[in-house]
Length: 300
Image (tube, rainbow, N blue to C red; front, side, top):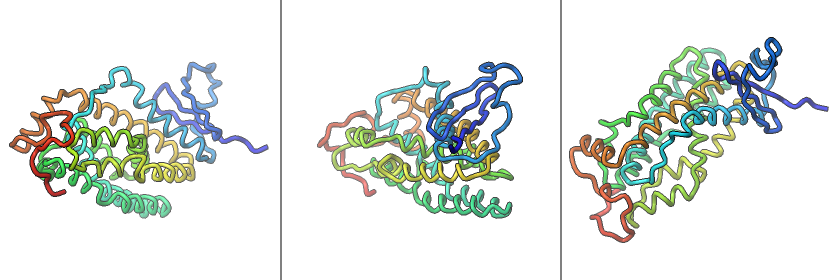
């Protein structure tokens, strides 16, 4: 009988994630076993599998968000908060192709063409996504180029810096964990989430290009599956580092997004209008009535 693959990764000083090929996942603390008898005290060395890899990666994201769950902000969506989210989306996507190609070049230098090829393909797939966010901003009557040139949401800055730093490391395997974290979270968005945004906008405004692309309706689900299979094929040391970075990125993502969501609508409006130096259309009513005339729709 074939042995079921079991993988484990220590993500904090006192927590390891354990996952089996069968789909079982649990979190392990050293105190759960007798001293000197902990089978997960040493790093794993065996082969991976898709089933156990997805357990580790998703377990890392869940663990990263667990610490913020009780204080996670859940405000009703508004156009102002959506504009801020679009600006954040622009900044997390605009440098992605360049960063991934930089990391791919390093892996070519290290004699790891399979990792380089994976990253280069991801770079091609992510090219142009920043322009989707700009089109959505324009559709809302917002001067998108001016806004993104002068404004990065505070909660997004650490996330962008993390990715920049990962991709210039001597061994940038962690960038795969970062990318997986963001794509996995995006793939959770459903058509109902897109409909909520449409309901806030006047009938003739389509401002969901980026959201549709980065949801279960776009390519994210396929990207997630491809990443799981690729990570499962990597050596154990690489898989460990990818899972650890998935956890670290989830921590930053959770804190950053919560920082923005905790702001009042008035605070967000003030930030946006200070940057562009003018009042912004659609933003003074959280839920405009469909059919209500708010002026001509800007070209998208």
